[in-house]
Amino acid sequence: MKLYSYFRSSAAYRVRIALNIKGLEYDYLSVNLLQTEQKSADYRALNPQGLVPAVALPGGDVIAQSGAILEWLEETHPTPALLPAEPLERARV
Image 1: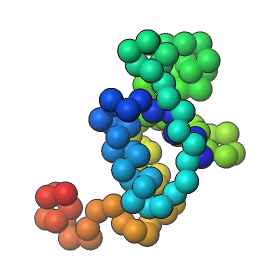
Image 2: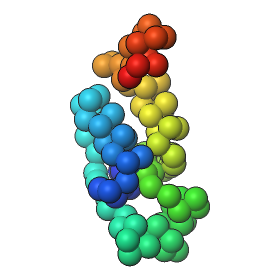
Image 3: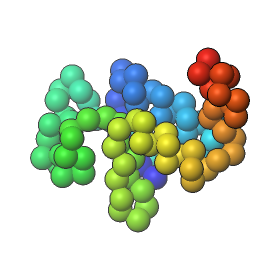
Image 4: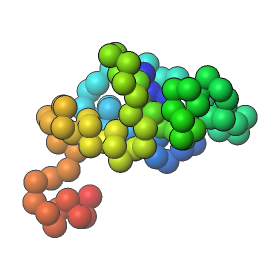
């Protein structure tokens, strides 16, 4: 799995936290937002939204948007869970 990310992006930071909590290995590929690398033709071919983070899966699929990535991680790697089972505790997290 490849994570296209930028260290100053809070959305990308959440995905890195989730990947580490779940103990998943990934290749970190920096997309420098200050140098507008997210607007490059190569990156836009991968992620037409031109945002970080994006996750490229081994089969070639790409998931963009941190919320979608976190949901995919939780559904495909449920243990350890990112959120508690109880709704109020989930809201607090």
